[in-house]
Amino acid sequence: QLKLVQSGGGLVQPGGSLRLSCETSGFTSDDYGIGWFRQAPGKEEREGVSCISDNGGSRKYADSVKGRFTVSRDKAKNMVYLQMDALLPEDTAVYYCAAEIFPTDLDWAGVPWEDMCVQRNFGSWGQGTQVTVSS
Image (cartoon, rainbow, N blue to C red; front, side, top):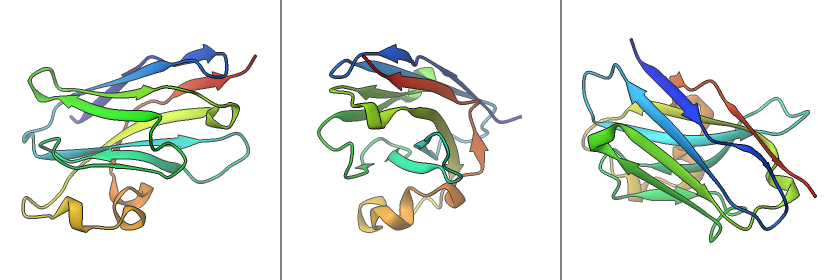
């Protein structure tokens, strides 16, 4: 059974930092990509924040978080992280990690952001964790 368990999140002041963690289990293969998404209050869609390929070699970010957020993964520990720095009030949302096994010959770097890190591409989801940025 595929499972993603998230930890981290909480309340932080503007300019502060948080790290989200996502532990995966139950995958028969480790060739899966991970996406981080967020759902802001009042929004129906989950917005892509960052995605990382199965080998960690390709990382993509939404324009709104470039230079502030960093995605990484430790395959030996089945862990994926989202380091969030210089947080802004507009980063307030419920954050989700998601996983999907993509074709092994997928050229992650060649796929545009808007086609790669979207909700419909990912089938397994974590439980979500609240991030609130407020003074």
